[in-house]
Image (tube, rainbow, N blue to C red):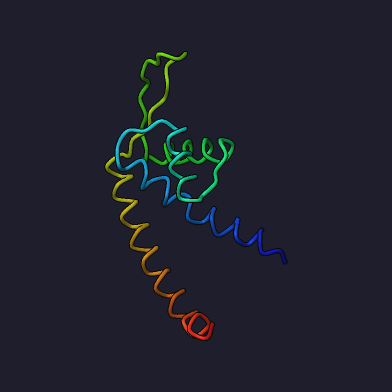
Length: 113
């Protein structure tokens, strides 16, 4: 079993939470989402982001609108719907519970190092 594969799976598991959190701050263009994720050391490629955005949009958690661009064709900007913000709160609550459980399960390991 390779550590890098497990680490990648862990990142993928929290990606939806992170993306919804970023989008809930306000209307945003996908390249800005990628920049914010990279600054948090969550490296995401467009091939990962766009299908996830589509899935969240189809679930009613995101919406988008087109804006003219000075550098080419119109751009699609995403924003969270009220359902998306509510869903995000549920994800945050679940994350907090999960983080607490993991911390409790591993505290003896981290204290012995």
